[in-house]
Image (cartoon, rainbow, N blue to C red; front, top):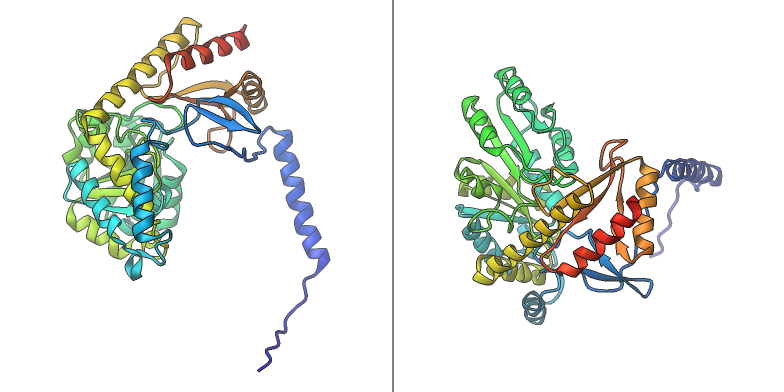
Length: 402
């Protein structure tokens, strides 16, 4: 049987018009210092990486505990690949829910001290899937102005009314809550450690407000999990409010060194997300080896060795903060994320390139990731950095500022 396909032929002029318009936009991005390209890294993630055959000190990674290339995680991956293969083969609700998924979710629930957990393909998918599952038309979502793009995108897609309060402005947050009583559901969403500024949310006060006005609170602990609290569960634990938070999200791709996102909370919440979160239902499951590695990372984080690794990270953070202060650079960061605000996009790119010439890799962060005029070098410190690495960075940075 011979099949024939008919239809409109592609119009070369239309294709040319599309390419011309896109090329013009790219040129405008280049002129504004906003053009982006990818750097092919030819080494494992770590405090030193290789680009174009040259080694660089890496101060841009979210691998806070240095687990991305840890031998224990690599052993877990190898064992899982031998037993389960590579791909999951389908979404979790079809036949992709291979055993390491359930094992990981049990560990995450125990680690976070909650009834249950659910794992998504990424932190982005976890935020979008959770928000769109929980709220919609007739509800209101209340965001901190500096919330992550995945939170903003989830809020835009869910159909609820969106209200935004200035960064950490509790007075404005309360005003919005007081004016939102007509809505069916009120959902406040905040990062606990803000990804571009490294500062922390006033979580105790937000919890009080959400209780006072009958709202739900969802927190994104992506940059706090593994770093804060006696048991390294996050900022909510450190501030003693984790049991009063309704929905807690985290990632496996930062301090845990793997890939994926997760939500923890009540069993009812997790059952609901399993049935309603579209980014979970309609996505192929993570490779089982990734889940096995993440389980190994959770085990490590909960161990005595994990505690020591976390302490080493904070020693490095203190060294970086003290060193920056000594060369006249002040920061409001309370975390391993330290933004060096440059201002102009082109100036930030030039500063990044100057450090690159001296063997230090810190890409410029520009609009739309941060507001226009707030371009920066987003410096991140990890437990894998040696004291001499930080000293080298500070020396080169000081040289540029003179």
